[in-house]
Image (cartoon, rainbow, N blue to C red; front, side, top):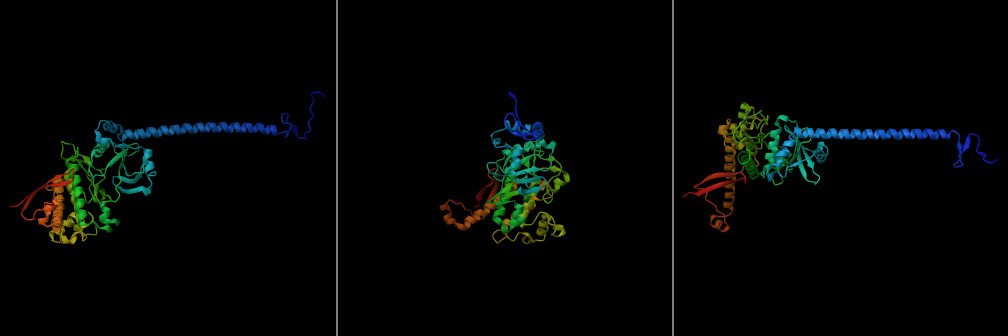
Length: 433
């Protein structure tokens, strides 16, 4: 019959009019449910993806706002404003991002920790250009000290002294500010005197040079920096040594800027026991003589190889200042000087260095010398030592052929000044008649 169609499919199947393939009678219901399921799933996934995108955008916006909040809280706006109006010495100050600091420290991995102290934790960081830096993460943020913190960054960024660890930049997007310094490779003076590195044993020539470098740096900070700086935490753990054993003063976290019209500040007492100036501890009045006291303790450590505080020493000698005072009173200085440094050729230098250390650690600040005077005295010791070495090497009759002006040790007078920028003494020597 015209228009008729005969289905040859078995019972329970039907012929698809398009493909003429026999299909189960309930397959069309299956396809309908499949289409519904796929449509629902795709719709759900689209909604989920949109929700995730919105959440990510909100999270990113929240993180951006939080970073901006921290940036402003840590004085970022003030820093940018002051840097834009600063001189050319500030062009190298870099403001790092939070992401950059996390990448540099591998998310502040514990194995990257170089040291920990009262001011925070120092991490070893690797920047994208593969340069190695030290990243200091403060323990606590103090919003009341933001302007002081910014001033400190500005001043340190302008210091170009070979014996000050160079500040490369900072990160203000985190809850507490991060400071980025040059990396110094050979550990601290404390390590070389008291820890595993001490096996290498610093010679007296090294110790005297290190003392001269530290003293010269403090003299510069007190007298020649654009704004006088009191370090306030001078100790062997804050003196870094590079591969040539050159001293680098570090950790200015406790330092204070002294206005030009003031000689001292009243502050909360801060510092390290054993190095802390007793007058500052009792009065809260901070001035440059507090650093002088701390340096005197460091000089005693260099001379004796002993720690500033040691509870294994007798009760009245637990503090190194008392330890030296007792030894000098009983005329047994030779017993407390490090056996690695004293010999028959340097006894006078060591005695003079001991006298300087004792002068620096007088109980009252008025009795202590200024750091410029200390630096000049120590550099004078070093210059005298060098002169004697040349004198031993070249007899007077041949010295003039080499351009070496060697004066007799007898009958000479000298006055010593100090160039804190070049870190050298200026000796005005007049031969006696």
